[in-house]
Length: 126
Image (cartoon, rainbow, N blue to C red; front, side):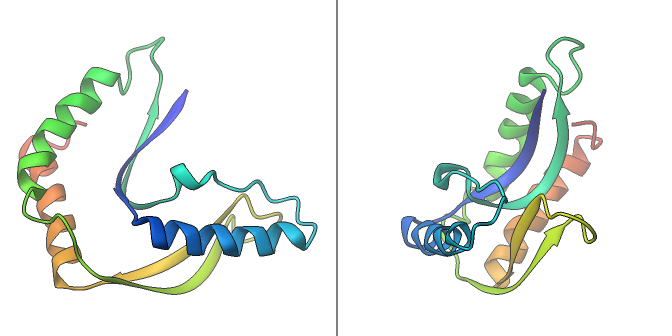
C-alpha cells in the first residue's frame, strides 16, 4: 500500500533548510521518524492509498491523473511561497507527522486551482 499525493517539489535550498530543522529535532532525542529529504514536498491534494492487489488507485489511474494535470499547470513552473507556522498530526498524543505551513502568492493559488479544476472536469474519479 502506498500513499499518493499531488505535490510540489521544493528547491534544494528549501529542502536543505527543512533538513537542518530535522537534525535539530533529532538531536533532542525525539522518537519522531524523519522524512527523507527527497520526500519533502508541499501537498496540494492527498489522493488516497494505492492498493495494487485490488486495483484501487492503480498506477494507471495516477498516470492518467498526471496527464490531466500537466497541461493545466504547465505555465506555473516557479512561484514564491513563505513558510509560516508548524503543527502535527494527530493533534493529541504522539505526533506522527510534523508539518510546516506555507503561504503562496497568487501563482501558487492559481496553479492549485487549475490542477483541482482539471480533476473536477474529469469527474473527480481519481
